[in-house]
Image (cartoon, rainbow, N blue to C red; front, side, top):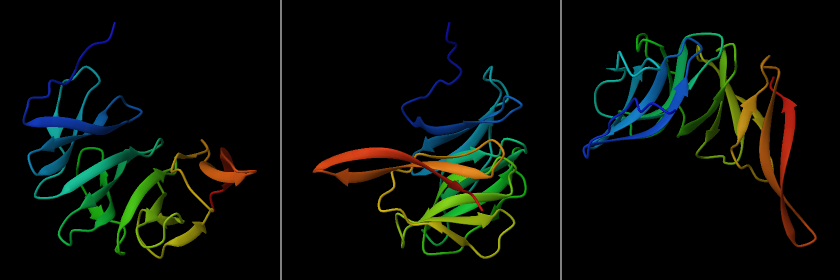
Amino acid sequence: AAKQITFASSAESFDSFALARDGTIVFTVVEERFVHLYSMALDGSGRRRLTTGPGLNQAPCIARNLHVVVFTAFRADGLPHLWRMDLDGGNQAQVTQGAGEFLIDVDPNGLSAVYARSDSMPSLWRIALSGGTPAHVITPASLDFYIGFSPDGQRFAYTCFREEGGRIFEDIAVIPAA
């Protein structure tokens, strides 16, 4: 049977979440005007806020082989950027500096992230989580943003739409991640 581990009030609601290999859940909590990231154990114990200050922190993603959380955050400049932090909330650092970036996925080794830029959708970009120069990955005719890395991080798949004979089809494409 399912066990309820959150108890949202009228002042709080939940959005997205990610699961770490050790059973930690990282999730978003909408609190009045801000969205923060929290963590807790699978049994609901140990709930704690990971992000502080004003901002909207969303779409957490955890590298499968590391305790690294990557997320999209709207902070000081009001634009969405990729951020990273340790699973305990420490060592928070902004990863991207562009005109607006939205996290899609993190490679299993926790070395890089794939994201979409608000100024070049539906293009996909990749950046090392330590920072550096982003690399353009692909610009499909359309992108549905269902994207995932292969377990070894060498490829990723995405869904896209195509028109043929007046009908729309949704396809899955697989490309090298590098």
